[in-house]
Structure formats: C-alpha cells, structure tokens
Length: 629
Image 1 (tube, rainbow, N blue to C red):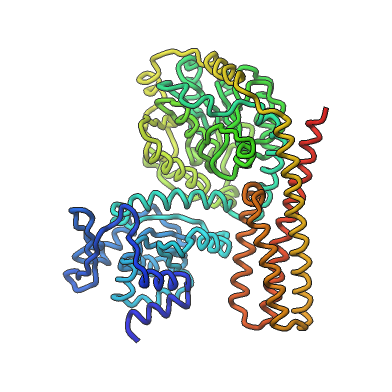
Image 2: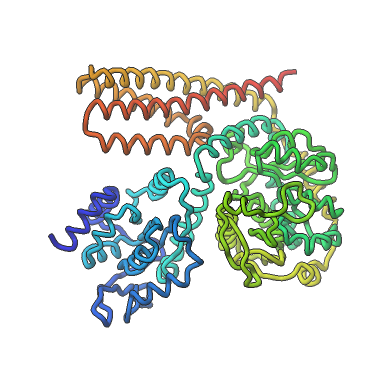
C-alpha cells in the first residue's frame, strides 16, 4: 500500500466526512478559497523534504522553510502565546504537516484540530507524506474547506465530546497572510460558536429559558420603545467612553466627572455601581444580561434615574426594563435574539447591533453605529489586575482567591506593561471578539485608556488623561440631544397593540401545531422502542416506523415558527442530541439495537421541542393577559 492509500485508509477510519469531501473534490474540482492562491507547485527543501510553492498574483511564497521546516515549526511553536499542556488548539493551516507533527510530539496531552482551507494543499500532503499514524491518533482531528464538510457542526460535535477542553486557535504564519480573509471569517465563526455553546449544555439550557422569559416579559416595552436605529449616526464625531468595571477603573474613574458635555458615557453592566460611588452619572446604561439576582442588586439605585437612557436587548432582565423610570431604547442583537422574529412579523426595522460574550463588546459596536469618534475603552482589564475582580464600588466579591483561580481555570498572560497577570478563558474570548470586531469597524480611532490589563489589538494605548486633553476639546448638549432624538422617534407611526395581539394569537396556534407533531413523534418513538426491546419488529415495519419519525421530524423542523422562534432556544440541545444519536446509530449494526438508539434519540428530540413549545405557549398567554383591558 502506497503513501496515498495509507493516508486515505486512515482518514476514512477516523473522519469519513473528510474522505467524502476529497472524493467529491477529485470528481469535480472547485476553485480555492476567496483571496487564496491561484496555483500550487510541488517542490523540495534543500534537505529533500516535500514542500509547496504558492503563487498568488505576481507573488511566489514557499509554504514552509526552504532550509529546515522542522526548525521553522519549532520556532513557530515557541512564538505562540504560552500553551497549556492540555486543552484544545485549532491550527489554521495543515500544510505539509511539519508544524503539527512537532505540536503533537511536544504536547502529548493536547487535543489538536488541524483546519486546511485549500483542498489542493491537503491532496499534496496526502500524496507525498505518510501521516497515517498521526491521523489515527484520537487526539488529532483534521478538517478541510469544502461545502460538504460542515466544519461548525463537526466542531460542535467535538465540543459535546470534550466539554471541559479549553479552546484556542492559531494560524500558521503563511496561512494568516495568504488566506487572510478566510482566517478572519474562521475567527468570527469560532467566537460565535463558542458563545453559543456556552461552556456546557446545562448552562445553555438554563439561559435559553431565561432569555425566553425575559423576551416575552420585555415584549410590550420593546414594541413601545424607540429602536436603536433612531440613534444611529446621530453622534458623528462625538467621543464615546465605554466604561467597564475592571479593577484599573480605580486609576481614572474620577476623570469622568469632567465629561458631562464632552463625551457620551456608556456604562456597561456592573460599572454603574462604581460610577454611582464616584458621583458620575452616565448618559446611557447598556444592558443585555438576563440573570435575575445579579441585576436586581446592580441596578437597584439606577431604576429611579430619569435622566439616564437605558439601551437594552430583550434578553435583559425584565425586572429592570419594566421598572426603569428613564427613557428606554431597545436593541436587536445579531445573534440569538428573539426580537428578530417579532420585528420580522411586525415588519419593523430597528437596526442590528453586534452581540458578544460581554456587554462591553455590544457597547463598542453600538458606539460605532452611533457615529462616535474616538471610541474609548475604560476599565476593560480583561484580567484580574492586582488580584481584583472589579474596581472599588462594585457590589460583588473583590479579591481573586486561590479557590477562584482553580474554579475559573485562570491562566497567566502579560499585561500592557509586560507584567504577569491572571486572566480566564472567558476574558480571552471577550478579547478575541474585540479584536475581530475591530478588524471590521473601519474609519474610527479606538483608544484603550484602561491603563492596565491585557492589550486589545487594534486599539491605541493612551492614558485617560492624555485622551481627554487631546481628543475631548469640544462640548455638546448630549442629554438634550438624546431626548430630542427619542422625541422625534415618538412621532413615527407606533406599533399598534392590535398587530402585536394578532401575531401572538397566530403564533400560539402555530405552537400548538408543533406540539401536536411532537406528540405524534413521541408516540411513534415509544412504539419503536417497545418493539425493538421485545425484538418483535421486522425490517419492513422497522422502515415504516423510521419513515414516520423522519416525517414528523421534517414537518417540525421545516415549520416557519420553529425556524424563526423555537430553534433559537433549543439549538444547542438539539445539536447534542442528534449528533449523539447519529453516532450511536451509525456504529450499531444490530437492527434492534439501532432501533433502540434511534427511538431514544427521537424521544429526546421531540421531548425537548415539546417542553420548549409548552413554555412559549404559557409565555404568550401571560403576555396576552397583560394586554387585556
């Protein structure tokens, strides 16, 4: 058996989807990824090792060092941000595998995902280097760029199988340059996927219900509040300061008192308590967090502030939205926001704000859409500077203890001064989201005036004093501007409650239809389970029942309301259930055992949807009850 055959056999055993993608590509080659190479030529290094020359326009680039690819790979590994022994690393660019070989040998406990954006390069690798023994290692997963390979689905499968594995991603340098567009897209998708997955399915399940409850309780305020689009581009050239609650806020929070009419102050999350302690009244509070207890404490004093605007998403804790006395503006987020469904039904466009793992990520995109320039980050440590959680005045625990270090999986990174500082994977995900967004938000000057914590690439480091002296030289009647803009929006045609009622009644009817389909599916799944358990099912009857289950599933998954509303709240659970079931069914050859696995999976799937629809129907009824005179 030759090199090609050995590699292909190993790949077929470990990842049949990638093998299938290769076969489809060989049968019908497609062009490489956008912005990628135009031609690829095999060549050898000076030591006789396989290499590739990439031609991009009039540029010729060697994929690996012409001298010693292994030495180059070792240097690359040394240049990476400090690697933990375990966890998972996604490497953008498989190339001729030299760097992955070094990585696998040097970190025997690390799980590696190699992602190759160009199938031509992958084919050259499989034909010229025997990597079959590595492919067969269960700690290595190889993915390729092809329409038949749903890499996000495969990655989610991986996350389900390894829920505790911390995820990081790095590009092999040549790929970062040659396939820069694809690298950015991968980063954005990675962050979105990790945010959606939420570290574990229990947490996701809890928050999906919480987000639904908050959405329906916030529904009436949302349709009566001006949309965020009314503020878009109305603050062109006006500085904005996004205030977060990081410990370095102690250094400069007092300077905010100078900025009442010189910069738009946006308070993100729990920063409001610190601002209150220092006598600073922000122009706006940005809120997206749905937790009940935390928000009840954080915003207790802010509820009565009549000159502060609340910019909120419908995931925000409804107790704050419904009791806030000041003006309110609703935001539609681009990810997991049920408001997208409602606005679609009402034909209402209020603009879209980028979501993120923290309210500060959302606030930065909001400031950009308002037209603000420069945009300043304050208190954005993304780390436990001086072993503190928050700046002075925050209502929660202050000192970062040894127990916290273990619980949160803290890691050491360098701060902006080159000193060691503790941070967490959650903070690093926020940092990555900032950096990916900053690559897209062009034409503005972004300043990180935190004066501590991690460096956010794409921002300019200045002290807050320097920032104020150099960029905050003009005055603007900011509170009056906000009030006038919202007053103008109140002249627009309001959303009639009769339209909202009609949407809710129609949706309730559709939800009942989905529940009816779920009941049919549950009944059929139970019959299949019973027959398979008793081994009283022939192949013909088995296929009939399997077809029925597929029909109920198809009717549910294609139902418009399921795709527009229900899917958002069951996505992670459904992914986990269907992928687990698929693996069990594919690996089982006994008819009755396959039937039991399929019945169990369908029972879980229909049960998840049924329970969520029951909750939605209850929330619709409660909302309709509030609308009765």
